Image 1 (cartoon, rainbow, N blue to C red):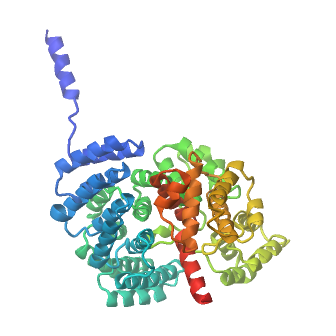
Image 2 (spheres, rainbow, N blue to C red; image 1 turned 180 degrees about the horizontal axis):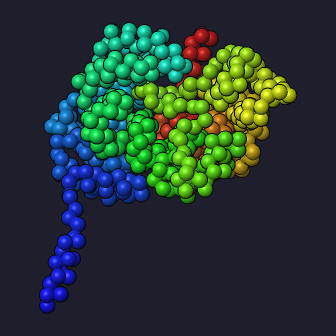
Image 3 (cartoon, one colour; image 1 turned 30 degrees about the vertical axis):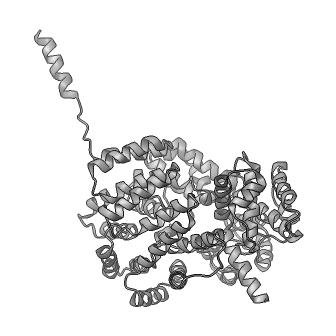
Length: 568
């Protein structure tokens, strides 16, 4: 009897009591999101809200999941609750509501939410996207083109922020600081400028000035993620005891916006928070527009190694080499994989000579990289040291400049350059073949050459083009059909080999016609094109958004409008 009693008491002592709090349900929700179980994630976020009803992050997460599930009205109700009772300062909720209204095709309400957002936070992190959405909405409502004064002012600030960010990435810190300080003097509440100025000061070792800018942002916006990340980096440098609390706060953040995911992932990697970094890098790999950013696969692989997930890291490195056979970083770690597994070699997050440039604030990122221009590149090839030449070759992206292409062909034939430099130059020449004729502004002119540069041409791709030309041959001219084919080939080239499943070819054809009509400034709505092709508006909208993300159709629309204005 006593023996039985002891066993029962031992068993009772081994029972682990779970601490059911908001953090517990938050972690369960994130785990469900990783497995695309939105229904379970929603339930867990609802429980997190019950435990911490005053935490706006929990409410935002719940609104985001509802939107992902297509429950736009319910999502908007949650967002309105945040602004009414939880945290009225979260003006970005107006932007989120505008997205939901646009998905419900309630364009007037979407427009009103965008105007409210821009009025309350004219230079906010979503200002650029709000401007683009406003253009789309006005197009849908067949209103004349043109921006409101609020949008014009926003675009002006955005342009100057982009210039300052480019100066930062080029290492011209003094010029960047001067421009950012001027922006802040004119608009003290421009948080993006303050965050980037903090980075510039940090890079120059002016840590007190960097901390001052971070503090100014957090004083006005305590939940600003860029400032929180920069604060943690400064605390890490100073060995500040407050770092533990700051890291705990960052661990509990799950950003829905891609730019925030990049910032948080790279920050946590820098701070040695590998589990958190791994989680966010994995999420980033799901974005279509990061499909060809091979450094992201390496970051994920490095984080996976710190987690002991060596098989996964091996797969990620092999994936890079599958499409970038000359990539030296993954090749190095695959050659030394046994040492990595044994723990005698620790992978670095560094990918070649490139830095994690997402440390800079990219609130209005347009996808531009920090490669040198053609003149700088050619100067380095002719006069730079070997290390400078390698750096230039690994960071430059060919854009169709024939002078650069000719110089590279001559460069690889030099008898005295090292094999490392030769391989880097050959990689660029392969890139030229893959991306020839692709411009961020203009559509492809030489369609046949662009088609021939692809390793293959699938008959299903051709059928989608033919569906458009058959449907539209009475409504448009030959130039329109040419541009349909050009846009579709550009899309295929940019996503290749990660091609979409063509379950609804009519939907892809309809999306192409809709987007090319926008480029040609022709009145065409989703409803009209849906009737022509016999598919739903939601399918066309989804495919159009994907083509737009990959090919930046909005930029082509602006270019066509500017060209038309010049010609008139």
